[in-house]
Image 1 (tube, rainbow, N blue to C red):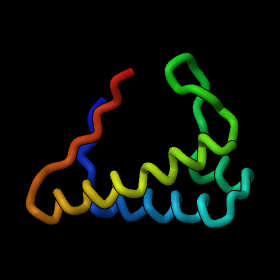
Image 2 (image 1 turned 120 degrees about the vertical axis):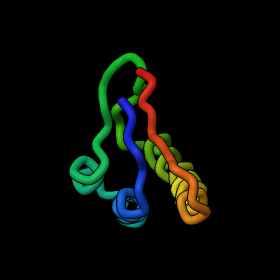
Image 3 (image 1 turned 135 degrees about the vertical axis):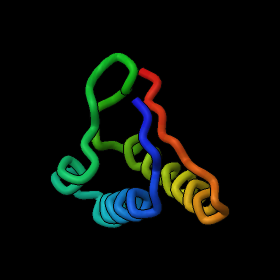
Image 4 (image 1 turned 90 degrees about the horizontal axis):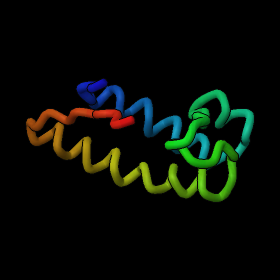
Length: 80
């Protein structure tokens, strides 16, 4: 499936990521950004790797926001 990414979507995602990174509260993260089980998804633990993935997501959000502001369309495509 494909999804056209908007600034609003990026804003919501960034808020959720930052809340999880700030609090590192598993209950909050389970609600805001839950893990997914399955072969392709990796660990379902809310551990160091989970929070590292969130940290790595912030620059991607910023890159996508810059591209949208330049007039580009950003498309999210799930590959599994």
